[in-house]
Image (cartoon, rainbow, N blue to C red; front, side, top):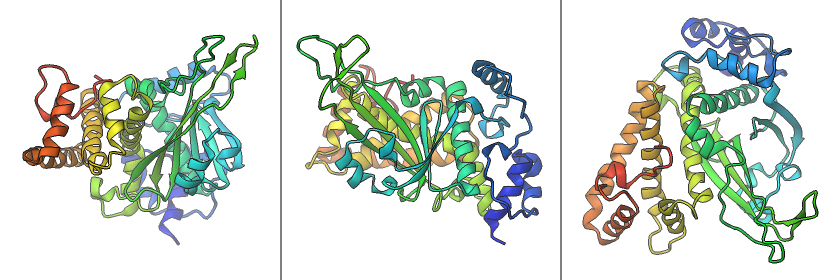
Length: 370
C-alpha cells in the first residue's frame, strides 16, 4: 500500500499532529476523499445556520496557540467555491500569448476552486489534492486573521496598484484594475515554491451601469507549490516523508505564500514603491542578469522573515531554516561589495532606504509590512 494512501484515513479522523500523527501511519483506507468536508478537525462545528462573519469569528477563537502549526481549525465553507474542471482561461482573463508560453503548465483543464477571492488550482480530485485545497484555504484564513498586514497587501484581490492607468480622455476616468491571486499545486517549481505573473492590459473600454467608459487591466499573480518534489525534510528533518509534508502544510505553506507574494508585490506596486520599482526594473537588466536571483531573493526573504518573526507563530525549525538562507545571502552580498556592480546595487538600494539605514537588514528589505 502506498504511503500516501495512509493520509486519507488520518484526515478523516482529525488533523491534530501531536495526538494522532503516529496513529494515522498505522491506518489504511482505500477510499479517496471526494468531499472536502470529510477532512475533520477537533474544532469542527455546524456552520449551516451561521453568517460568514459568525463563522470567521468562531474560527478565530480557536487560533490561540502560540504556533500556527498547532492551530486546529476548520475552514469557512461559505467562502469555498468550486468552479469545475476547466482551463483557467475559461474563467480568468489572461494575456493569452504570455499565458500559453510562460504558464503552459496550467494551460489545461484543472480543478478550480476559490476561497475568499483567492483562486486555487489542482490537477484532479484525488485525496492529496483535496487536502492541498483544504490547507491552502486554511493558510489564507491564517494570513487574514494572524497576519492581516500581509493579507491586505499580498492576497486581497482589490488591493491593486498597477500603475498601468489608461484614461479615457473624454471622461478622465481611471481604470478598473483587478488582481487575481492564484495558488497552484503543480510540478513547475524546481524547489518548494515559485511565482509568475501575467498582465492583461485592456484594449478597449468597458461600460459601467451609467454608460461611463472604463479600462479594466487584469494582473494575475500565480504562486506554484510543488507538491511532488517539495523538500520539507530540509526544514523539519523527520525521517518519514509524510511527517515532513504534514508539518509543511500546517505552517510552511503560510510562509511560502507570503514569500512568493512579496515577489508579486514588486510587480503590483512598482509605481508606488520606489524600491519595488527599482527591483522590478532590474529583472530584465541585461547588464545585471543575476540581480533577480541574488538580490531580489535576499530582499524578499529578509522582508518576509522580519515580518513573520515580529508577528510570531513560526516554529524554530522553519525560522532556523529560513534564517540560514537569509544569512548565507547576506554573507555573499556583503562580501561581494568590493565588486563595482555589487557596490552599485548596494548604493542604489541605500538611497531608497531611510536615511539612517546602512545595515543589510534595512537596505535589503521592503518596508510595507513594517
